Image (cartoon, rainbow, N blue to C red):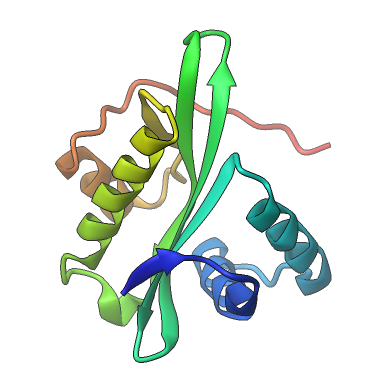
Length: 140
């Protein structure tokens, strides 16, 4: 079942994102950010629940961008438990995220994906996304 994330989902969402990133994030800070995002309308946390357990998360942010002159949605995090991959659930979740983004006035959906996540890249291309940018960062 797909639904909007709730505060009670925080631990499961945390566990999924830590697995995705391959790090143990500081839980207290994660919880603080998660709670804040749940309250702000420019974020939408979509979860997939199976047998009362969150097994997937797709976190969206909606923002107006000057260089587009329009409202754009960005997938911030998208991860499924390995046992739930390859079953069409991610495809459904992605389609639902597109619909939610459109309902929130967005005309475009973007995602940045780690260069090592080649399976994710193939997924996004299959879902009609184009790879048109490089993304750079600098630790501060």
